[in-house]
Length: 200
Image (cartoon, rainbow, N blue to C red; front, side, top):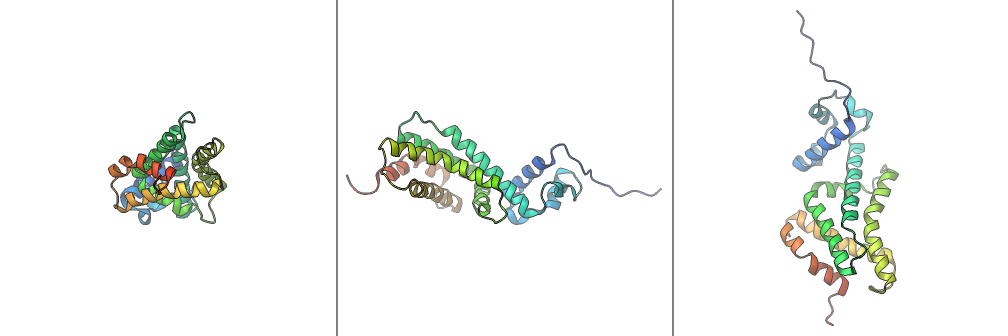
């Protein structure tokens, strides 16, 4: 009797989601270099050709991972947003939410920013990025309208604020700041950001 080679199924109930879930797990545990469509196919139990229906290559997979990261971050920031709060606690809540996401998803966040400007990044990516920036935009625009912060180019103010938060996230990722210390220092960080370093 001839034994036929074991074959893996081509179809999967929700292959795209399964691949992205497995890819994010690999990203957390082993890093970007270890990601392989063939290995992911083996992990989720489909043929090596099956992932090609959703991702033409590894770069397309990475872009999709980054997109899901931005979409998740946008939801986290939206949940933390409370327009009824005064500026400082409102911005503090947003900062805490961002840093919480950064702590829980360090490898994904690095990938998100690394893939953001790839030439083949989709329009969906641009929209997802805009949604994450939008939370900060709204807070700063509202604060300007109320006279709570200086006038000026909102994009520049957004850049300074966003760079501050992402800089702290980078410090955590590099091990220069513990997650506990970062979260404990959010109130002070936002206070300095809003009021500056000059004595008053």
